[in-house]
Amino acid sequence: MARLFGNIGWLLGGRGVNAVLSLVYLALATRALGTVGFGYFALILALGQAITGLANFQTWQFIVRWGASAEEGGVDPERASEATGFAMALDLISIVLGLMLAALVVASAPLWIDIPPELLSLAFFYCAISLVAIRTTPTGILRLHFEFGKATAAEAVQPIIRAAGALMAFLFMPTVTGFVLAFAAAELAVALSLWIVAARTQTVPWRAISLFRIPSRHSDAWRFVVSTNLSGSLLITGKQLMILLVGTFGGAALAGGFRVASQLGQALVALARTVSQAILPELVHARDNATEMARRMANIAAIGGVIAVITALMFGRFGLELIAGEEFRVFYWAMVILSIAGAVELMGASLESLLVSAGKAHVAFAVRAVPTVLSLVLLDAAIDWNGAKGAAFAVLGSSSLAVIGFYVAILNLKEIRLVVEDKQK
Image 1 (tube, rainbow, N blue to C red):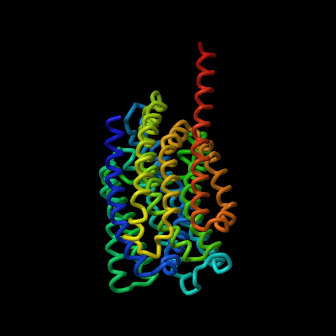
Image 2: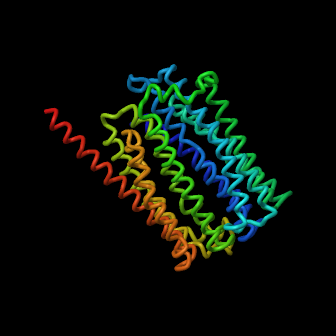
Image 3: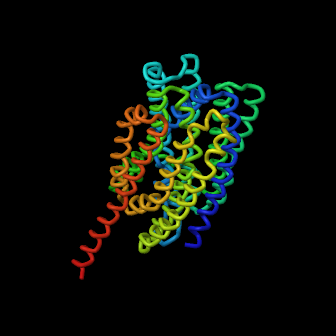
């Protein structure tokens, strides 16, 4: 547990730096672009992140799962090399498939999304940069070796470049193009930084790149790959697709306001992913007490979630006006609702990781898929009912149903385990 809390501390420290610097770029972009211009900017970012999330495999989980030694807490160099080679091969596939998908989506964008035609080439450019900058593999290498401090230092490059780039755009190029270029530069910089640090931690096995070695050793490899990819893609793409559909049904201005409310109110979702990312390697190495570890983390998360929601209620309106400007103040209640959704996700993060570590990634995907799809289907009606607040309630409902599903799935796993133990006795 001591190492777990240390790892979480490193990750939260990095998230803290990211959060503070994100407020800088958010303030600069909203004030330079206004609600409509920021809406175009938000839609381009969401498009790039959705396509990258859909195409990207969660390769860090493969490296952690198959690179660990049979001995508790150890790393097998040969297994780590094979797992990393497999992850790199999947990354190459992600880039090729992602570029094809980006071309198709951007070409059809005028039919369904509120992005001006003159910005479509910029949208494809950002999609391409995001795909080339995929960095889950070097992140997996560092997590396998429990080098969370090095990972945090490398990832700090992104918010620093974003904030500096946003300042340059605000001063010299206060347009959607200027801010998108700043974000693209940050994506490339953080990917390069992580690869450099990862290569110093573990030799990057270029000759080990293969789609066949890991599956030949692990019969369930492709099922695990597909399940984790679908789960990760669903979480990332679902969030970005929500913003895209808000723009489709409500226009760019509503999408911009929803993005601001989401970024401020759902900062806890990033915290939830941080807890999940820190706890998964520990659960893989310590399966005997994995359930107890996940339970403790869920209890701690519940306390943090309550504090964060109270903070959003008390200071959210002032924060919105201070950071984004008075015109974004109308999105206060959407931000509060999204903060509650973030708190729910925070409590469910360790439960989802427990399912994945137990080899039930396909169950975790199924549990999250149903409420996510349901929320997207009902989004148009939710926006017609209550605008941004309606969209926020759709997110809250999706998160709540998913976490309840994780809990029920874990209870069923426990019942199965007890039945097996009784038979053995």
